[in-house]
Length: 470
Picture (cartoon, rainbow, N blue to C red):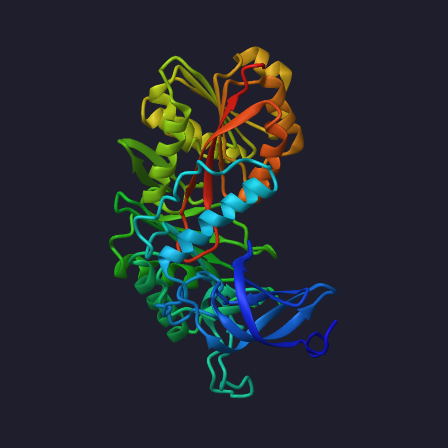
């Protein structure tokens, strides 16, 4: 290793690519650098803060020549908040590198020809596109340069987002560009009210404090759900805050709260208490209504989710008489969305409460040709299940980021459905699964979809068709 590597400082590094986690990639001799907030085309001096034998992670100390893809971030919290890591890159460039990341994963890992890959579908909105945000109350606010923890007059309370890599430090958010109103006004009003009224913010280490989380869900139908998660609050504190929110924000259709005194933030095992309105709001796609509860999963970019599901349906090419298996069905969104175009849909999902949501979503839309089952995919999708329900004409699979369990992939190989539409939020794990499936399936269509502007994340839809010799 050269002298620069020993001192962990490199001059005039040219950034040549972008890594899966969104960092810029540069090289100094044979030493690979993953550089925070660097963009292909940048030339910069880089200080390494974490080093291995052949690679290191670093940050820019001086930008010698900015990339043509650079732009001015629009958020005051950019660089501290971990939410929108690509705001310093033009949206056109983001799409280019997302397209490239999908192509690279499929060609490198799955050895698939990506020449006919379709252009990435941009998000119709690149600001205020999320329908759900979760904020955290903390008495350990992230301090900016110049602020001293020794200053006794300093307000250490925060209501905002976790600092990347720091579970116990919360960035106090002034304005977030991810969710439309009333999200920002609501959060700032609540913070102002609880500080003025002496509420204690949660201590993530000591597990004390009255206030833990604030969850805001909005929908394309105009409905708003707000969930306040209390820790060690008394009845008076709960009622006072809920009354303040109710009076100040009459547009809230579902106002809920939770008393969570566990040591983790998850609400899935907690009772939800209703302060005002029903315990749900509605989303709508093509006239189909979806009931969204406080624990329901729903794609967070509502407008682009419709386009994602349209692509999924179009790839399947339904004629009307198909039996469809929808794996990892969640709240049955895709299953109910395609049900009108097929003979029957069988949905499978690990989370029992999601399956109950799926059944409700079928019922409220008078959809009678769906069946839903809860359980571990690799256990449910057994030979007996297929024998009972019939061999599917089309399998739609939309697994979590980890992709499908190897046993599930093997079951798909045994079932030999004529078509598989694979929706993925992680092209690398999708490619890993496609490498196995390619023994029996041809990859016919590839369509990346941008669901999350200003982040490195990208969805990808692939159509697989069973080879004729099978």
